[in-house]
Length: 181
Image 1 (tube, rainbow, N blue to C red):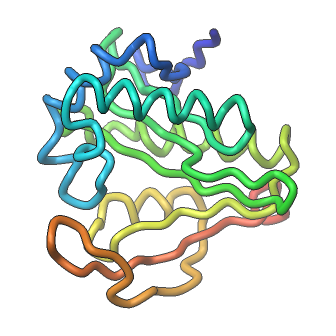
Image 2: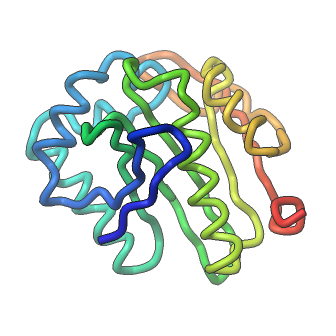
């Protein structure tokens, strides 16, 4: 296992694995409503068993090189994470996602952790395009995409249903030559 220090004191990025399901579920319980405002991730980990299945699903994706999940720890407490929801290495595409519980917001943790993932995907794995898909209503996540130097490619109107409400989906991306410059 690796631990990558982030720029904020006491913050670390680490793989998030199935054996950590109890810690992950406790984290989701603390931030469920906040995290679930815009993404279904919190709802997908509604109990300990579903949290374990979610983490196992990402372990399976890591084994098949189609996705990865990492936790963000602050002072040794899991407070959020970043992931490659989708990785298509043959096509040179990956989608980065994130979540954070409310007590950890405003510290740049997601931006710092996302930079680590994007840099790895482009420099180590040869990914050409990294995407960031976000509800148009999720202003903090859009701000991260901007801080990462991503370009807004467009909006898919009324694209998905979240908690009974149709949502627009913004597509942001950065290409390898843009990232490397």
